[in-house]
Picture 1 (tube, rainbow, N blue to C red):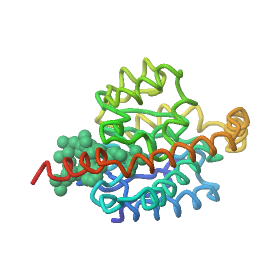
Picture 2: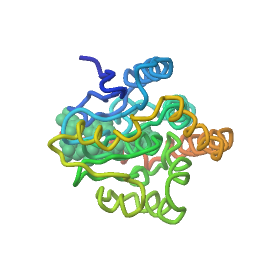
Picture 3: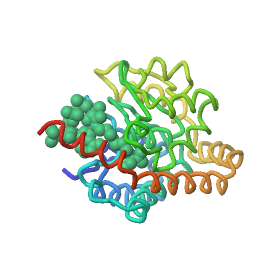
Length: 254
Ligand SMILES: CC[C@H](C(=O)O)C(=O)SCCNC(=O)CCNC(=O)[C@H](O)C(C)(C)COP(=O)(O)OP(=O)(O)OC[C@H]1O[C@@H](n2cnc3c(N)ncnc32)[C@H](O)[C@@H]1OP(=O)(O)O
C-alpha cells in the first residue's frame, strides 16, 4: 500500500495519507501522489466531494516530515519544498469540488494547513489541532495563515497562530474552525451522514456554489498572500532557533 490511499466510495473521493507510523507526516512521495490524485479527481465524474483524512487513530497529519526536510538548511532549499506543498494546498483551496478534512486524530503544523485548505473540517471527538510552527521558530510555511484568515475571525486566527498551542476539536467548533465532530468508532460513515444533504445535489450545483465562494475570495489575492507567507517562512527556516528545534525533536527518542 502506498503513502496515499485513494478510492471513490458513495460519490466521495477519499484521499488518505497513509504513514501512520510517522503520524502521517508529509514527505516528497506524499506530495507526488497528492499532485497526481488531485488531477485525477478534478476530471472524475463519479465523485462530488473530496475528503482528505489520515491513516490510523492517532494523527490526521503531523505536518512536514522533519527527518526528510532536516537536510534543507538554506532559505533557497527550504523555499523549494515549501512552495511545492504550498502549490498543492492552493490547488485544494481553489478546488472546483467541495473539500473536507476528516480529522481522524491530531493535526499539527502543516497538518493544520492541509485541514484549513479544505472547505470543511469534520473532527473525531477529542482530536486536537495546533498551528505549532512558532515552537519551531518558523511560521506556517504552506500558506496556512493566509487560508486561516479566510476561515475564522482575525483575532481567533491570530490567537491560534501566535499561541502555537494545540486545542480540542470542541474548542475548534466554538471558533468555527471545526464544522462537525463525530464519534471515533465510525468516522467514515458518520462523515458520510453529515455530507448526505450535499450529496443529494447534482455536481453542477455543488461546483457552482464553490465557484461563488472563490469569486468572493479573489483567487489571485489568496495566492499572492500564500506565496508571501511561504517566502517569509523560508527566511525564518534558516534561523538557528529552527534548526535546533528540529534537532531536539529528532533526538527525543534516541
Ligand atoms: C515543513 C514545514 C511545515 C509547515 O508548517 O509548513 C510543518 O509542518 S512544521 C511542523 C512539523 N511538525 C511537527 O513539529 C510535529 C512533530 N510531531 C509531534 O509533535 C508528535 O509526533 C505528534 C504530536 C504529532 C504525535 O505525538 P505521539 O506521541 O503520538 O507520536 P510520537 O511523537 O512518538 O511520533 C511517533 C513517530 O512518528 C514520528 N513523527 C511524528 N511526527 C513527525 C514529523 N512531523 N516528521 C517526522 N517524523 C514524525 C516520530 O519521530 C516517531 O517516530 P519513531 O521512529 O517511532 O521514533
